[in-house]
Length: 569
Image (cartoon, rainbow, N blue to C red; front, side, top):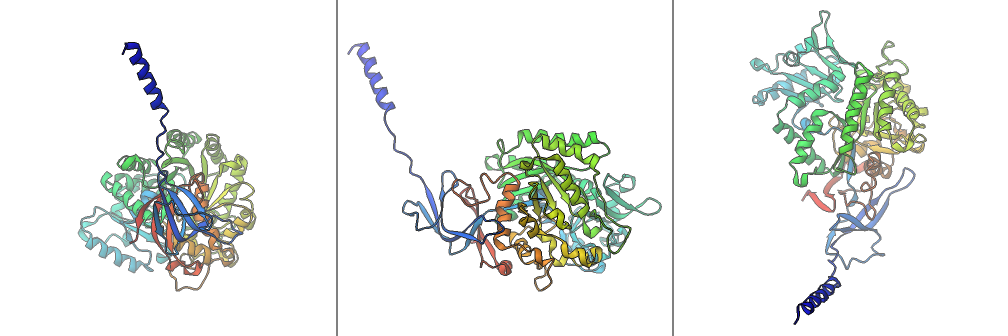
């Protein structure tokens, strides 16, 4: 055979190989049968359940959800019996604090202590049992248990000769109570009050033990995180993720991200398989007021810079979604900004941490760069400022958010929907066990108008449910219980209800804790609902479909991207 003939033969063989049709790889399908598969609904609809869900194993997405009468399961590679359990989209905590949540899991909890003496006894015992700790870290202080007092001298004798720093966080994290050793460790005597915050002092200027608002939120908690060893920070983050996954969560919205939290999460992420977080996290960069507009805008620019490299398109599992701005404090400290004075003290109206002339450059810079704006607003004066400001900024498609909305006037509740503002709400905060002083602070008329969730929904606002962990437990089912019954999950024996007329239906509340929180973080394109093409992020719940029985319900499985990542069995 000539060289030319050999070349022609080789060419023919190559052409034949190119036209060979390789057999297609069979589609691997996992079929979940005998379940009640919850489909997203709005506030005016009852629950809608399918009885079959099929997962494409290769892509980790939903192939089919609907009636078993309309789709055969003969092509299923794996078939799993859900035992008539409710299967929902994976929960998304629409407002939480990840690093602080992990830290709180390793703190002494005094939330059930009702007096100064009970608090002292708990801390003294904890100190004796934990002699290896460098600091005594405590959570869950309810100001009412000490009549609002927070004095270092009441803590100074609790650790004997060790005299370690004692740091106590209030239930809402807006205040901190320190002993003298802790005040010395942070050099409180020579530290100036930050804008929007206060270090309580005596007549001689000596700190007495209480740090409030930005002195706690913007300085103390980040300071304690920063001086914690990297090893402990990595452990705290892992503990937080584990707790969330075991509770049925497949997504989180981190609402007070500052440099220590950001860098810690980047380090943790780098150590994970595939270089991604266990579940998705959307972060909001914390913007606290400074002494100049230039400094405020510079902080926004840092968020813009991070967003360029960490966004939905570049790193969906860990991204900067927007900024977080605190407009006021909290009712329990009488720092929530009110239009009318607090009922027990006519000289108190709370505090606005930002004035409009300071606030607008921050909001305009963020919105102009495509960042989402989230504003903490609890008192009606702060809520009105938040709505007015977002209306001025415009851009109803940006899904800007207001967090908490606790003492919201009926008029302002109706403004959210038409302006496209997301109502980011945390039902755990209206638990009657936490509301015992609100009658005193707000009076009998105002207290009946608080947490008007159903009013917001009826006016068209998208609700996004979160827990605000660690200021409240991260468990989703007790959160839904409070949202739907307005009764106490902390003290179930109680029969009182918080502004019961504003209760949500169970389907609406569950949609808010799944689809709503996905929508609020621009994740609704891939998660938050059970539909073909969506990620198979699922929570399996053993429950009766009855709001009054939610405290008896349990999460039994968590699925992320088509894989079961946790099971109670």
